[in-house]
Length: 232
Image (cartoon, rainbow, N blue to C red; front, top):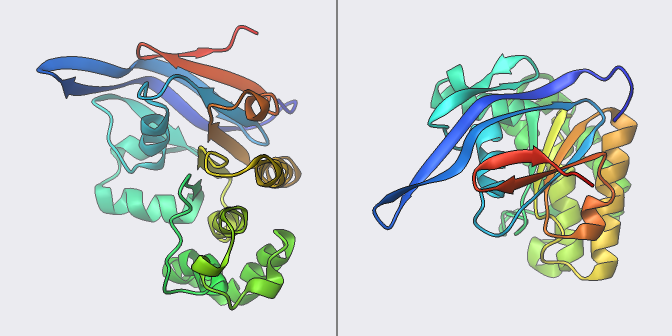
């Protein structure tokens, strides 16, 4: 973790439960954690333990049963659903396992869309920013292609460019290499690692991969509702 880095995410007594088979099952139970600028953090755990739920809570897509979440100093859990959506759009980049590209939009249009929706300075600079990002992920020549003409690795690189177009301090990645072969997985992780450390972003990445987790500054495990630092 970088020295004297600033706090980007803070979880305070965060809890989330689901009803399963008539019983209340804890997904997260009074979780506390802090993640900082320029830090790559891996979240691990068995399937169904709540890794994706944690990212959705931080992003404001889902709501906790109790506890608070601060992102960049803003208490996300105090915001209305509409304000959470706006805050997520302006401050958080989300990279999904299944890419979630819009099939009827070109590569360029997919990347530019969040900035156009945000409006203001993001929209005014969108063309330059989107083209710079496509060049950085090695896909400038594919700007007019549609997603179904791209490989899985190329689609994920487009999704990363889209997540960065509004220049967020926080990037959340949910199994971003889960549908990729080894070569494309390495390309995607090298890219995520570079843009996190170079630009002082915080990256929280859910992964089953030990190789991906080995790149992280810190690793947390979710077990029986508890979010705990990896012991080694």
